[in-house]
Image (cartoon, rainbow, N blue to C red):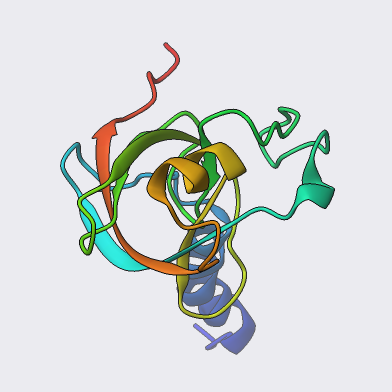
Length: 135
């Protein structure tokens, strides 16, 4: 029986390629109570009315936010440790895409946190409710 290098490579590599093509679901392994800390920013006014990654229209007066990995519909409590102020927002967009930032808030959420003048503040983000999964 002759050794076929291409066939052997296909048998060894194909499962890895297929695994890489399967997208990891958002919130994989994330549970209610999951927390992270880092820097929060808020959306510029020019995004008012534009579509978010979830397909919703951005409204700066809603309590919404962008996060890089949490599933759309996830509810999180964002708290400023320095003031104790907190707000609950729904993830409906992707971002922020600036290094070191973990969440991008709507203007209303930023206003409630008292961060409009600073622009960037340190926050704790806690998952309080995961989105309901379709059946």
